[in-house]
Image 1: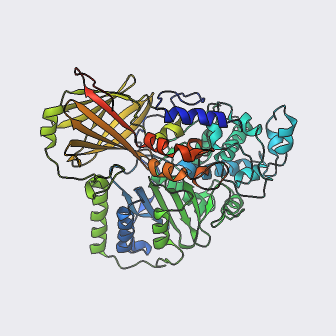
Image 2: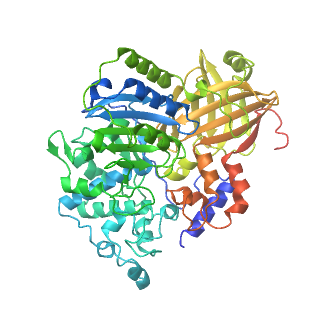
Length: 593
């Protein structure tokens, strides 16, 4: 296929430790700084008992998520009968900040198509070849001749140009239209984010504005959703299948709009017919079925907006409840520990009371204290965890942070290779924003504030370190601002070396970066992990070519798909779990290890 060469070029550049612009897709900074605009039209808050739900039961659910070694929750909101009965952010993630949705945003693309159908601008049986110009190759036109808008909606187009094509160049529409169908359209479920992208392109063609602009006018503004960002492709088209940042409570509004049959506070936003059609299964996906850009869930009548790494808006009409979860785990297509936990608590066997329960002030106070604990104490401070290198994140601290910075404060270390970036590898690929590599590491203390200073290319990033809580810093990555919450520990490794562990959680993303800096005289050793990308990539190595599984999820395939990956396993893992060495500035470099 046409993008195979591009994939292998990107892969080998990564394996070789190259930095800077790696893909053939033009990069231009888009992402704005999160402004923190207050939520407009917020949901009313109520006690769980007033809405027929036990505070104690909610507390057990939140604890199950917190105790899971793999769920890694970021935000949780529970809505019952239009009222928020519980909300919790797990430190360092904070309430009210927008979060990447990954494929969860496909359900918004489905809403935009619904608007176009309701407006008479689009029909589901329209052929793709009648909407976009076809390539000169007549064979391609013949192969795509039966692909309809509905095939794009329910992931049955069969078109082979998938997420991997997003690294092949700037012309994504031409790439899709110039591809071929590996299966007859309408016959089989093949999850493909480029189907969603083509729907966005259709919306833009029919309305003359981007899909995000249409949604802002027709859905976001009526629902009071004021702070949202959706990435554009190099063609200037809303990506449709990924790239959306939205606040958790605003994401709940979108689920509630569907729960109310397309009506928001008495105003008709979407037709009832479109909502009903979208939220029933149109194709067998090996689970509970797939509707129009959303997943059918386990409870009768339930459906879900679902995205990579555990982004979910679970709508349960039979009990008038919505569960919203943002997370940073290895969840793929609602399969994993997080999904198992939430189905155990809120699956078909769970039934809230139809009438209010007696108010339980003791249980409500216990729930409030539990939520405050999760919102205050980061996971790194709560429990020991073994990392890729085999030692716990929490060890005996040989010296205090003040003592540590009296020794290293003002020191700068020059890295030997300089190919490890602060941005997790998965994020680099998904946002086409590749790292220039950490070239220098410095340490500084100003009063009681302690900083880890990283120089990537020409960009200097000052990360404030929190030793008993997370400290928040804003950094720029090639002109795109990101907010990072950093927790740190000073430990001893198994060799007795003083070690600084710094975990940088990208608060708007599903991923985080862990840096381990080992001190040995005038030299340091730097090791890097990322969550959840390391686990995902490791699992993905077993899949190649057209085999089903993890390699078919958005963008993971662009990193690991293709033949011969078995012989690259150890090399790729070394790239994910990178190691670099450095020397104190002004000393001899010695031999790179």
